[in-house]
Length: 195
Image (cartoon, rainbow, N blue to C red; front, side, top):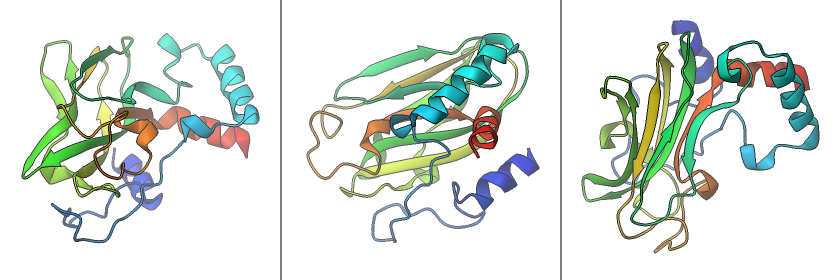
């Protein structure tokens, strides 16, 4: 886990340990460097992913699938759930979540639940930073190892400021508004194969 987090920090995907997260956008906006941009994958990368998938003998392509699971493009007043295929070994992931804050409360946010209905991770205000655009926009970028098991992803939004009805400027990468759980081992394989 330490090596995984060190690699994520080196790539600039997480704030350095001890760096205070801004509760409001008065602090400088720091764009997020995503490990892979799904909406911008070129044909060469698509071909590499197809080839890696065709040789993947892991359960549910966990070794080569760049996104473990995702809820994106969230609109107003939604309560969405996504189920992940069972995972038979630990998976290093990068969680990228975009949401909305009102005052000191997140009103658009997501979380991960395991098979026992325990919350494994939840987007909280103290782990978010300003996501660009409107002052309400927040992001969480968190490295985590998910133990073998079964997971659900949930995301709730209130009645304003989301895809299809931005009441101010959207955040960085509005395509990802919601929560994306990137599979870091698979992305490393894809990156090595496309160099």
